[in-house]
Image (tube, rainbow, N blue to C red; front, side):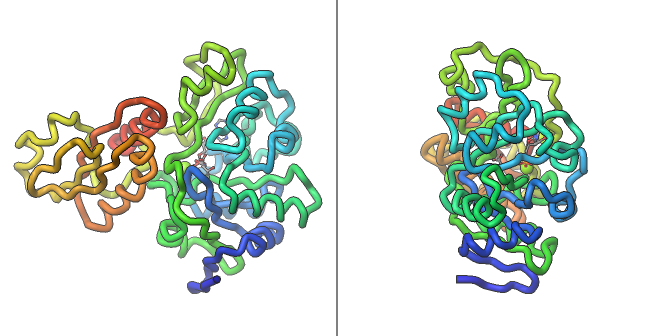
Length: 331
Ligand code: TXA
Ligand code: MG
């Protein structure tokens, strides 16, 4: 099934997406974390169009997505043992490793840094695209450079419809949006810097601090000299103002006294006070992550001016949800 909406082609045909990428067009692709806006990672013109479509500064590096760990290591010059341990335990999956780059990784993908970020995604639809692209190009280590498919600084998309709403007018004839259903994890991959003596988490995600410790047997580093420019304080922001509150503060009157149209995002056990729009009532931290970005989009669709958000406990992906809410609130 395919639909042509003006210039942009919304499809569920993985071969069409692979052919578009091979020809130097862009393909928005489903991943288990969020949708990405992909380009061949060895094509400077295609990658430049990704930056233009997102409105993203050129020094913000992209993640290179590949089929398997062997392909990933082709993009790196050095791979420490703990990076191999992480890959063995969590790839394919929501984990990105930052490594010293090989000559495959051009400045136009790394933002001029000497490191490269690589990930082997688990989503079967994206994996099919990577396999087909490898067959077309004859390169088993072929990479797809893909940032989240949102305009710079905005909320990441977790459905093909979100991508179309966000980037439809910024894509061109020949580009495609590949529909692979809703993203299961819902927040972006865990990024681990593997260029020092011990792993350092640069961005929390579904693969937790404890998961990284368990996979590597190492004490994690706290600070990294590596720059991850997308991890700015203000990010993941809807138009509505996000205010982080504790569960007991939700019901206090001072939130209700002005005329703001207010939404609430909290685990289901937190009750909804009168006059407030419940945006989501997830039962678990996993569900919280899965519905988070759609709920923030819903706040804007309803033209709410404020979202009260109660962060979940920091277990598992809860730490990543709290991280994204903090950044959304900093905007
Ligand atoms: O789940 C995800 O990671 C999604 C899906 C599409 O894979 N991608 C994603 O990409 O979130 P993006 O571009 O929105 O965020 C990538 C982050 C940015 O913060 C960027 O600075 C960081 O990865 N990054 C990329 N390459 C890096 C490098 N060489 N060193 C340090 N950070 C890097
Ligand atoms: Mg992003």
